[in-house]
Length: 119
Image 1 (cartoon, rainbow, N blue to C red):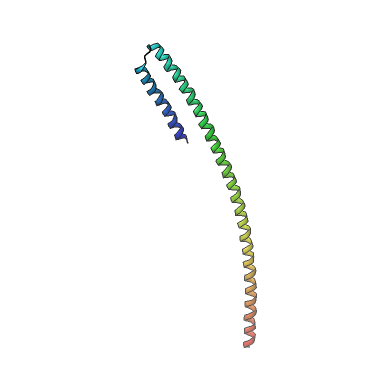
Image 2 (tube, one colour):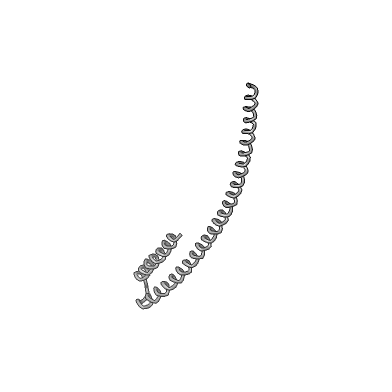
């Protein structure tokens, strides 16, 4: 964004200088009147450049604030989702442990039954 502002400011300055040079070359007025006219136009250009700069600064500030707001929302949303995933992982871990214990108990019982059957 700052490159665009810099480019805009450079364009205004270069355009002003070129316009002033052309005005001097083709001016049908005396030097004093031409210089006064150039000064007025330069002041107008400077005022316009300041207005454009302030508008660009305000616009970029709003864009920055919007981006920060969106990032904060995404951060909280992500934290919420991570919390939900942690709860599901804990649930599944507990279910896995229970299934393991159940299978282990049944397998132990089956082995013990087989051992008693062969005695």
